[in-house]
Length: 390
Image 1 (cartoon, rainbow, N blue to C red):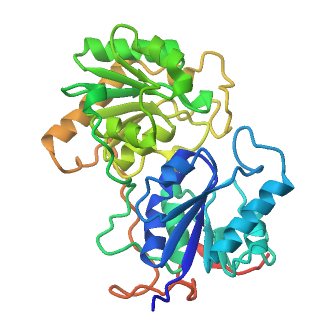
Image 2: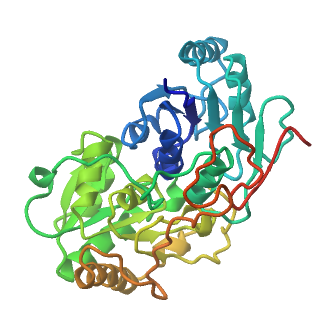
Image 3: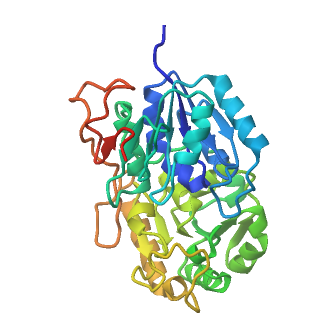
C-alpha cells in the first residue's frame, strides 16, 4: 500500500513563474503518490509541461496577475469544491518574494487540506502548518526548492535541480533547416522588453553578422514580430500553436535573445543559452535565466531599479534600448562559441557568461536518507522554518 501523500503545489502567476517551480515540483513528486498543480490560466500550459505533474487545476485568482478578475464567491466555491473532492493530504504554496500565500491558504483550509506550507512574512494564524522564511536574495527556483526541502521533499537521485520540461516536438517544419538564433521581442510587461524599433535593429544586426534569425511571439504579438522580422528574419509570430511547440523552436536554437519573460525560462528549461535583456525593475539575482549559460544585458543601476514598474518610467527606455548592437553580437558569439567548444557540456563560468547551477543540498537528512514528508522541517535548506508564530 502506497502511504506517500497526495500533494498539491500552488503557483498562481505566469508561465515563467511555473517553469521556475519545476525543480520543487519534481522533488514533491518524488515523495508523493499524486502531485497536482493549482495554477492561473496563464501558468497552466507551463504546468502541463512539467515532469512529475499528474493533474493541473486552474483558478484565476483575484489577488494575482496584471488584470485580476473581481472577487467571485462562485469561483471561490468552485475551487474549494474541486480541491476538497481530491482529498489532498498536503499542499505547498509557492509565491514570489513580494507576494503573500495567505489568500490561497485560506481557500485550501476551507477545502479541508490538513497540512499547508509556504514562505510567509505575514503572521499566518491557523492557515499554515509550515511558515518558512525565505533566505535573502535567493533565486526564485532555489527558493521554491528550499521550501520543498523544508517540507521534507528531496529531489530524486540524479536530479541536478535545473529547469526541465517534457520533451518538446520537432519544429523543423516551422524553422527550416540549418542553425538559427531566436529573437523573442515581446513581454507581458513592457518595461522588460525592447521597443519594437530597437528589436528590429537588433534583428538586422544579427542578420548582417551572418546569423539566421527566427522571431517568435504569441498570436497577439503578430504585428510586433512582423515589424521586428522585416526582411531580415523568419517571422513565427503566432505560428507556434502552444507552449510545447515554442519549446521545440527554442530547443533547436543556438541561442535565444529575449527580455526577462517566460521564453527566457522556457529556453533554460530546454537547455538553450540565453542573452537576456534584463530591465532592473526586478532584481536579476532572483529572476535571471537559471541553470544555463547566459549573458545579462541592460543597465542594472538604472533609475528604475527595484521599482517593479510595468511601463518604463524613464523616457526612451535607456536601460534596454540603450544596449548597443555590439554587445548583443558579442553575447551571442560567446554563447555559440561555448556550445561549439563544449559540445554536450556547459561552458566554464566567465565574467559575462554565467550558468548559475542548482542549489547544493544543505540541511535535511544525511546522505542516502531522505526525510519523510511531514517530518520536522527544523533543518530547512537556507531558510528558517517556523510554525504559526508572529
